[in-house]
Image (cartoon, rainbow, N blue to C red; front, side):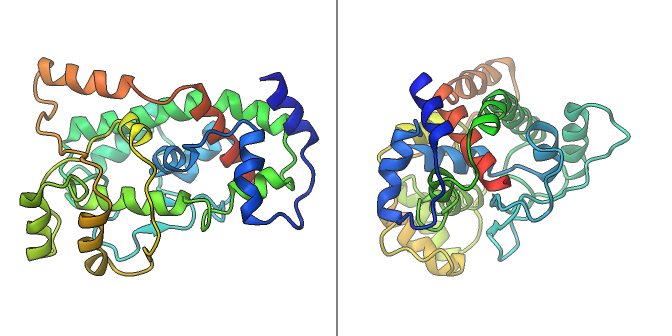
Length: 282
């Protein structure tokens, strides 16, 4: 950690940093090799209200943090900025504000995550809040030491080239079309036939993505509409990630989900996320 702190303090401006230099720059700064899928997972449902509470009270609507669009019917798969979603400020705690947001949308089957029941949607909200809470301490340290004009920040915020945006698009497909990367042709053939979102649930655990092989996105153009990408994703990005059949409807099934979310990020993940958020917000 002392070495990382020294690098952050000594990081200089990056007027001429090239993308090819970024892997070495980020590794020297202590950023993990799997930062891109981890960041995509950790910010996919982040709101502007969350940013202001956990990280930067002065953050604006032009915050530069891409998120997955919670409107699953929209053609816009990814939003360029974490949105202002309208938390009810009559509530004084973030827990109640998140609870209210979920309950207000509980009848909208196209909102949030495909086929999650209300308990699972609430669990997801609290799970993400726990990640952001644990990241906030790292953020304070990074904010004291890292120069936002440094080459580290140049590399971390280059989401077009560092795969953060690619992994976020992949996650959006998994949310919209659960099982699309499972390799299960019963599921994927149905998507190819109907071009509709099938009722199933994708695995919540970040561990599944971090332990999988690095994804090769060569040849993928996520600017294309869903219908033009479904076939290639189902065929070329198979990671054997299954759909979940055990919904939270009993104490036994809750134990399954509890074990799943407890396998979350380690300390390196919180550090990576803190660096990304600081660089994006400054």
